Length: 338
Image (cartoon, rainbow, N blue to C red):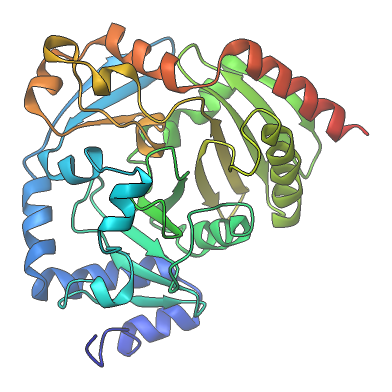
C-alpha cells in the first residue's frame, strides 16, 4: 500500500478531529473521484441506472436496475469459494488507487466502487475476521452517529447478503435514499406493536405485510445495546447452535432524537427465484438495502418483468414466518419485563 493510503491531512483531518466522519467521507469521495478510475467509472454507470416504484399499503418499494452490482448479487459465498479467492477487503488486496480514512484504528472507511447510493461506503475491519455483529454492534452505533450528517449505516449478516462473509465490515449509504428512512414513522404508526415505551426508549415489533422487523429508538446507546442483546439472545434459539442468527440491520441517527435501529430477522439467504431456471429466475440477492426499500436487479430482464407479486414472493421466502415472529415478540416482552 502507498504511504498516503490513509488520508489524514487538511480538511479530512480537521473533520475527523471533530468526529464528523460523514463530511470527511464526502471529502474522501471528492479526492477519489479525481484519481481512482474504477470509482469514476462506477459512479458514471450509476448515473444511468433505471428505477421504478411499487406502492404497497402506505409505503413504497423502489426497484433499481444496476448492472454494476452483478458481482455482488452473484457472489459465491459457500466455504469452498470463499477459501479459493483472495479477500477483497483485506488491505493488501485493495486496488492500488484506493484511499481510506482511519476509523478508531480498527476500521477503514472506503468508497465503494460498485455503488447503489449516490454516495456508498464500505467500512471493513483492518484485520481479517469473520462477519459477526454481537461484539461489533457498538461500532455500528458509533458509526451511525459519527456519519449521520450524510449516511445511514447497515449490516448484512454472513448468510444475509454479505458478499464477504469472511471479513467483518459495515456499509453506509446516502441518508434518505432508502424509502424506509422517510417512511418509518408512518409504517410504525400503521403496523407497529409497541413492546416497550418510556421517555428514553421505544421498542416496536412491525409487520407491514411485506417485512417483519424490530425497531429500537433511543438517544442513549447503552439502552439500544442492551435491547439488542436481549433480542439477539432470543433469536439464538431459532438457529443452529454456534451460528449467528440471520439478520440485516439498518442504523439511522439524528442529533435531536438519537438512534433508530431496525433489525430484520431472516430465515433464508436467497429465495427460490435466485436458483430457478428460465422465466422463473431472478438474480436478486436481497440484503439490508432491499429490505430498506430499494431492490437491486443487475439484469435488465429482471427489472423489466418484476412485479408486486414477485416482490411479495421473494420477501415471504427470506423473512421469518409470522408464527415465529410472534414467538420472538413474546420472548422479547418477557425479557423486557423480568
